[in-house]
Length: 106
Image 1 (cartoon, rainbow, N blue to C red):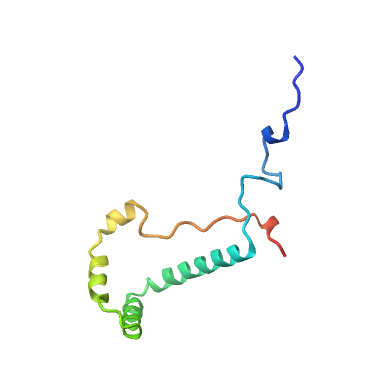
Image 2 (cartoon, one colour):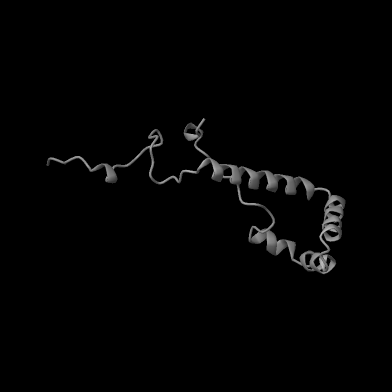
């Protein structure tokens, strides 16, 4: 039985193949936004290790922007069940994306 070669669209691609139509390509602006979001998440994670800093930050934001109801919002968030949050993954940020560094434009 003679098998004809598969067309390129049906060929399996391995890890060594550089070109892949399945991976989205990010523009430099998109990459900057992703990096800024990741930086923001790491700063929040660091800040949350010190409850006093979180309290001071909330108080300062409330004062500077004349936001009423910060205490009520804080009470509502504090009432969330930590076990339920943990069970649904609401206690942490999603993992950072993995990037193919061979494609990063220089």
